[in-house]
Length: 106
Image (cartoon, rainbow, N blue to C red; front, side):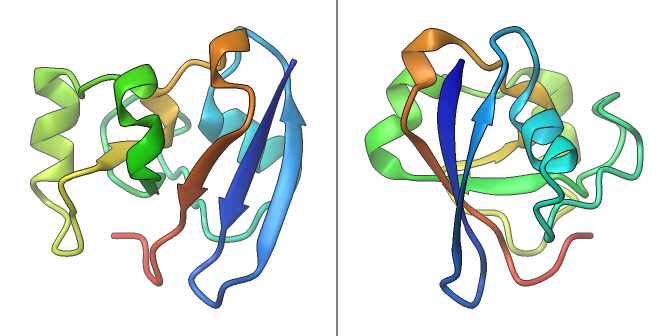
């Protein structure tokens, strides 16, 4: 299990526990965290599960794949530390992860 803190655009913080082996997107959906749409269901074919990873966590989360990069490029709110939450597997190493949710999902 890993604890993940989602910080919504309005500053509201929601901390959830996620099972190892799922994804950050699944953790949000399973815990009804608003702000993650996940229209494609985690197939990396949209960008509606966009999160901005806290800079302190980028090394542990890692860089996006080429496919993820192409989806992120469609997002006008992309930042240097943007990721698709469906592409971040939950591991014990991510216990305490902090991600920010954008105002809009595209």
